Each structure stands twice: as structure tokens, then as C-alpha cells.
Amino acid sequence: MQFQNITLSYGERTILRDITLTIAPGEFVFLIGASGSWKTSFIRSILWAKKLKKWKILDDNWINIALFTPKELLKYRRWLWTIFQDFKLLPRKTVKENVAFAMEVCGYGRDEITRRVPEVLAKVGLLAKKEKFIETLSGGEVQRTCIARALIHDPSIIIGDEPTGNLDRNNANEIMSLLEELHQNGKTIIMATHDEHIVNTMKKRVIAFADGNIISDTWEGTYCL
Ligand SMILES: Nc1ncnc2c1ncn2[C@@H]1O[C@H](COP(=O)(O)OP(=O)(O)OP(=O)(O)O)[C@@H](O)[C@H]1O
Ligand SMILES: [Mg+2]
Image 1 (cartoon, rainbow, N blue to C red):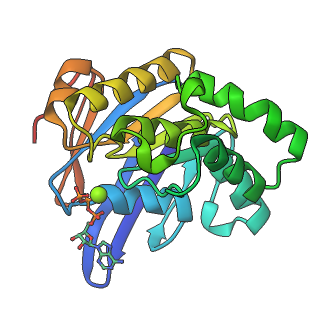
Image 2 (cartoon, rainbow, N blue to C red):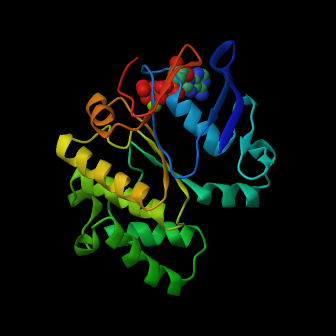
């Protein structure tokens, strides 16, 4: 996957300047940068194709997501999936209902929902807690529910925007083990984070941005701005 000549501006202010970035299938990449620099904007742009002046993404062929029809955009968003720091789950519904609801909204049939929900809950280790209400879960369990919801489409790429941002160390580590496991199973993981500890212990590719440019791109990198 190659992002080419990404330029992103809000009014006069340029957040990203002609960024070209290649991420190979199956990579695990941390995106780091000062607060308010670019990370969330970049992820939103990938998802929604908004606000970009120039944009290209390479899969097998060049595709310009800004030109996607709604149907193509839907398919594209299932190919990649984003998990956010704020969870966006329905608090008064159970774990199982939240995942099932996401599938209903996406137009899956009853049988497939019945079959698939326990499958994805097992993958994130939440099968035993499937009847629990979201508001009674720990932060880590809530985030695991989000990951379960992300897995319903079996996406090739999982993008996290500070998925551990609201979690304590134990819960954050638990989420990182889960992401590592998904990575071992072939998923591409791209994760924006401020968590120095996570970046330094996991030793993955680290891409740092400042002033609209990539300032470093290191294999087995550390948190260094
Ligand atoms: N819709 C918008 N219109 C104008 N400016 C915006 C808009 N969204 C974000 N910005 C600005 O763009 C800059 C980048 O914001 P963004 O949320 O992408 O940063 P971030 O790196 O994700 O920060 P954090 O680490 O705090 O989450 C900020 O200065 C922000 O104020
Ligand atoms: Mg952000």
C-alpha cells in the first residue's frame, strides 16, 4: 500500500506536505508525532477521503479514493478498519449485541450474524463476557469489544488511533498483545500513539512526523521526536 503525494491543509495551514509512504502487507507500523500535529487528520483522510488536496493510494492498481462511488467506499472501508481511542460503542447493550448490531447495520443476514459473532468474540478472548453490558466492562474489555467489531469484516488492515490512549498500563498491554497476535496472523497494523513505553518495548517500524514532513522512518524504532 502506497500513499503518494499526500497533502493535507486546513485553510492556509498545511498539516502534511507531499508525503509519500509505503507500507507493505503484513507490516506493523507506529505513527508518532506531537499532539495536534497530524495523526488523527491523516487517519480520517484515509478513511473518508476528505480534505485532501492530492491523494493516491496504491493497492494493486492506483486507486483514487476521492473518486469512489459510495459502494466502492464501503468495500474499501471493510478492507481497512479503524479503532479509535474513544470507543463509540452502545453502553446499554451487551458485548454480543454491540457486535451483532454493527453487523446488522452493515447488512449481514441473521445466520451469518449468529455464526460470526461468537467467532470474533473468541478471537479477542471475550466469549465468556458476551452477555455483559458495555458499561460494566473494564477499559481493556471495552477496547477488545471494539476490536471484535472491527474483525467482523475480516479487514486486511487495522488502523488504530491511540487505541490504548484511555487505558491503564495493564489494559494497554493486553490490547497490544491482541494487536500483535492479529499481526502474527497476517494483518497489517498501523497505529498512531503517544505511548512511549509501548513503542519502545515493541520495537516495530516507527514513522515520526513534524511540521508536515516525515522526519524519521526506522525499523525496530524507538519513540523519538
Ligand atoms: N476540521 C478541522 N479544521 C481545521 N483545523 C483542524 C480540523 N481538524 C483538525 N485540525 C487541526 O489540525 C491539527 C492536527 O490535528 P489532529 O487532530 O490531526 O492532531 P493529532 O496529531 O491527532 O493530535 P493528538 O495527538 O492530540 O490526537 C490541529 O492543529 C488541529 O487543530
Ligand atoms: Mg489524534
